[in-house]
Amino acid sequence: MAWMKADVLGAYTSLQRDYGDAVWFRTGPFQLFVFYHPDQVRELLVSRSKSFIRLPRVMETFAQWNGESILIVEGEQWVRQRRLVQPAFQPRRFTDYGRMIVETTQKLLASWSPAIERDCQIEVDANTAMTGLTLEVICKVLFDVDASEATERIANAVAVLSEVGFHEMQAAIRLPDWWPTEFYRKKRAAMKTLDDFVWGIIRERRSEGVDHGDLLSMLLAAVDEEGDGGKLNDRQVRNEAMTLMLAGHDTTAAALDWVWYNIARFPEVASRCRAEIDDVLTENLPTITDVPRLKYLEATIKETLRLYPPAIGVFLRQATESTTIGGYDIPRGALVGLSSFATHRDSRWFPDPERFDPERFLPPAVDQIPAGAYFPFGMGPRVCIGQSFAMTEMILIAATVLQKCDITLKNPTQDPGMLVHMALRPRAPVILKFQRR
Ligand code: HEM
Image 1 (cartoon, rainbow, N blue to C red):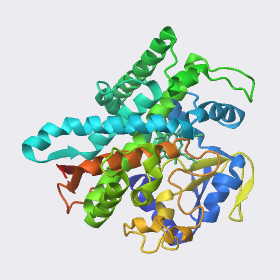
Image 2 (tube, helix red, strand yellow):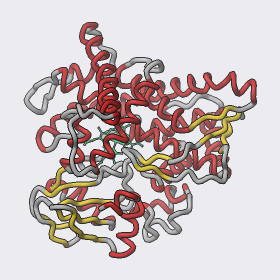
Image 3 (cartoon, rainbow, N blue to C red):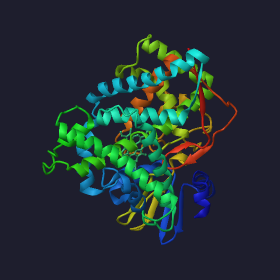
Image 4 (cartoon, helix red, strand yellow):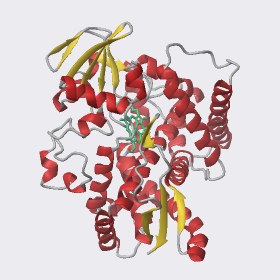
């Protein structure tokens, strides 16, 4: 499997090229099936999803910092936890979320203003800026706190765990955390940073006893009315809050890195986005009601997620019973994987697949995309719970910035390459130049 670890994106793509839509091989004691066809994607994630669980080995790694949260658990426990967390993502809450997203983005723009006044432009590392911004947004939405002081610390801890997680999932054996090396010292420090932050907020909230109308208040008060009427204890609240904080910013930040990269790279896309924003917003700040009208911007973001799906490592499942996918027998215990990266770049579903073209996600072309060919957020029961939030957040952030700034790349000819850790990020820094419009 060393060949796969060295270039996981290329490996999945070449397996399909060499063997077709269904590939089977052995890895250690397991049989691994990889499927690429949209019908097979839907079978695994939707119609036969009950016969599979997320790969325990991957989940054990995530569980070290997420605990037994919605991301990790299976079966009845998952049904209950999803039911308790779901209310936070109801559409009626999005007016407030939208306001928080725009305010936080404006704060970032204001911090750039002195440099733009002085030098007419500012150079920004996309990844640092977007990680900080999405972390601030999610902390405001989840915990009603201004985390600007803590974002650097948290972002560093997440970067460490992202790398640790990636290595641990691939290692033959996992060493104990007390192992006396720099790698494990950094891992322990990163886990403590995140724990101190989340527990600190939960303790403060419990002692305050005030309902802030945010996700944390909702989790602390949540009662499972359809189930046993039980509440979450503090450890369970901590696990869900930590998971939503981590899942709720890392992938979105990675996606935004690529959104800016593409908007800066393709001036004709940038000017269409800008024309639409000017037309829809007429110089007002964006609000939640503008989101459905920013169709071209939305298509630009969807096209970015097609070419650079941020959460590529999550589509590995293990069969809990014998079943079939695409007519192939899958024995109990076998592993089954999908590659959104490869399926999203398949010319049968996306003609001229390497070309960046937001029109694919607008009528009439969008109607030609088969169900199961595009799944950056997954599909079926385990589909990303934050999908609407993430899309809303990206549209509002991009609209707020593009309304005020022109964006170019510092190195227009440089291809940053792709780095596969927990999220798919640019390998080399993408340095953006923002100028006032
Ligand atoms: C561009 C941004 C995002 C992408 C691409 C993304 C993608 C994904 C994917 C592919 C999955 C797994 C689906 C599967 O295993 O079948 C997932 C699950 C999940 N995501 Fe996201 N996500 C994003 C943003 C968010 C946000 C903003 C939140 C929360 C605020 C979030 C919370 C979660 C949770 C809790 C799960 C586990 C759901 C479950 O197992 O029931 N994600 N996401």
